[in-house]
Length: 273
Ligand code: URA
Image 1 (cartoon, rainbow, N blue to C red):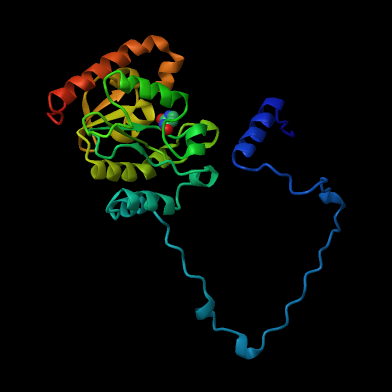
Image 2: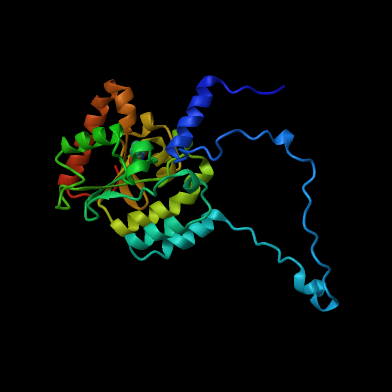
């Protein structure tokens, strides 16, 4: 049976194409391909002379060696000596198809000297357009949360600054959740990013970030409990987008922010609780 697209799906698909930059129709009028001639006569190639015929051994296709995307990511990430090189390695990484639908690679924002590194999930529409993490509504909420404990992405001093990145640098289509294979490919890049920034503490924002950093989800259970991720003390927290949908959870988020502040004051890096 022929499947019909609902008007809602058709509109969503159109909006998505416009976001990707497909703003022009190529032809003025639709082409009815059933009216096109049946046979397209191809030019006949001239016969090869005996001298042009190569021995089979010379023309046999070379068997392609399958690439392990995670191993390729590990090699690319560990070879990056600094943040610019890491960003370039991500931009050149060919195995994650999300890059094909994204407008920008979203790498990071904030002060690389910050003691606190926040790892979010993936860019949304605003982040994809601007090439910066957490600049939409959830980003404004994130800024307000950290300002409440005296931290800001624009701060000059390491003590007052945050550095922000995401597990995925490319926006997934329709903001869908990243697939396990996509998280696995990006994990070596995040791990190297943490090594290069060398923060005192990490905040894992939401389930995808916990999945990448801890290998598990369940933010309601995980939040507020210090753990270790990428070799650093890490605090899982509710994602600001979740707080926008569930304002009652701000109470727990506030408790987590206070725990973060207390740990910074105490001199972070002192073993997971
Ligand atoms: N949500 C995220 O996790 N990261 C962003 O950059 C924006 C929204």
